[in-house]
Length: 238
Image (cartoon, rainbow, N blue to C red; front, side, top):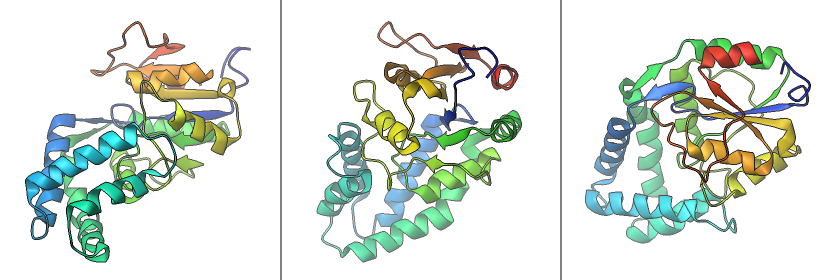
């Protein structure tokens, strides 16, 4: 980074949706949930699937960290069906391999995101994709492909399999775990995102950059971003 207070930055954490790629969240979420529910409909009524997925998401966000997100998901989701787990898991895996990629139409590429990532890696920072970890890694990587930034050697990509809670305004465990994996205090990290759940990392000492967008709704309880602007502004800052 460019001045003395910023030279100590060693790691950069980046949100995905709304930051590295734009998304029609409502359409994506609706079609994602409907698609997965349809795939599972021979075994679970669609309405029950939707209710169970929402329950699992809430439990993950409120997790005390005693188990990882996938374990929480399995505990809640598989109680909703009497089918063997391997049968349901095969359907879910097939959905992410064949149907999930079709949801690309609800995303808008930011070509400058690749320029940003190239500069970040050229500068030698540790890099984490700090996206909401409610989806499996295969889905996160697919969205990185849509953003045009999938092939970079990230130090860590948060997903349902490797996290034990989610981004939350009231629970800092998600960010605490990332800092522990990086073996760095917050003061050596910059969190880049477009909403309050990204800026909350400042409570652990992280610098923050708020990417301008439609999700910039920060109330008085959210720390003021260290920096704010477009991805082009961020490239000039780094």
